[in-house]
Image (cartoon, rainbow, N blue to C red; front, side, top):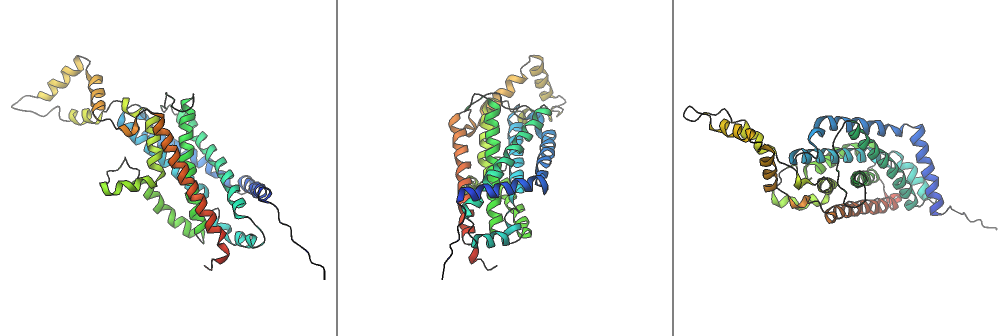
Length: 314
């Protein structure tokens, strides 16, 4: 009796087949909606915290934290449902010869395309709203490119984490339930914006926000900026009377009269420098390396999970 062998397509061929499918979904199944959403979010953040970004220490810390949040939010929404919504199809096609590595490679390329567009849109919105961006370059000859690479790595890292959650989740409902928890973890453990107990600080290394915020602060030369919070807090006490006089008001008037305010703000910033944010290419490269490492970890875990999808009886 004659036997027939089934010839499956190679990994590269399968990758391009699924990549074509993903781009068709982008055009015809409204996956493109993540792009205008990225513009809206960037606009809201630029309006809220963009005025002091890369102008003061406090404004830079808050602004870079907000930018990191934009990237995390975009990355999560890009891929949190993409695998779980077609889980049954993946299981069936895997039994028919689908290479999981090809399937994930197609998603990686497609998600990189989405992340790149979102970063371009975010930077474009910031420039349109006159938000100050870094003016000094550390890695490439162009500061805007350094800045964009950091945003891309943060977004892509979050994207691959969401892809891992999507691979683990049986339904889209489960994936969307897990996502807010992951978002809160990313925000709380950013390592700078919230005061965490010392024993919790090692956990900040697990988040994209910590490395993204650090890279963005370093690129904006955080330690060369003035600090205004001390001045603003003291200014609120200018009308405090001591024995019928207002000594602080007199001091403030003298400072303003001699044009010493800016020097005082710069001196305050100098005394509150954080050397984790030094204008140093080594710091930026280390942050990029951490983001790439976690991205690779998430991809590997996703492939391992899906390779065992046939054994999943959920």
